[in-house]
Image (cartoon, rainbow, N blue to C red; front, side):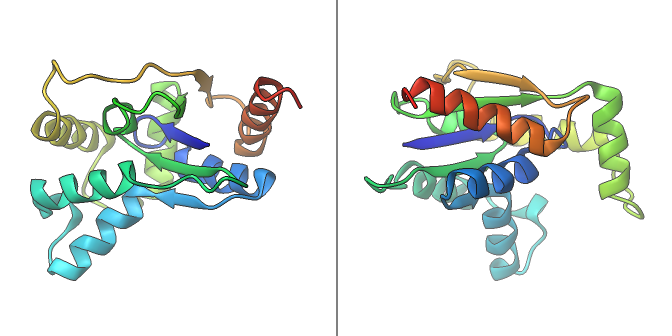
Length: 168
């Protein structure tokens, strides 16, 4: 089973994915880390990474085999587009109030000259370059608002929901 955790910047994807991976005992693939690694390899910033490189990462992500004995968690921004043709993926969308996202962004990006509005605009520009508005998207199987609950509680909610869905 592939569990895709997606949503905007600073909604808690990475933290929740790591905690959920611990709860379920399964590996986690962080698409953002793959983008950063590819950018380092190319000697550019993640924002300068080519569309072709992004498309290759997306293709590798689509080919993730889910081992028969365990789940795989994938977290990233545009997984609703990346997995659009994959009907067996559990899509977990994380949302968060904009003021909380702004607070998280400020904590994470202290000293940076980028603000959340600029980051969101950059993400929308990348999304537009990778996927057209007509591109198919998978709808979330589960949506969790992370605004006022801890990342651990979010991971526990998701794990419980998955367990119930599988009849455990």
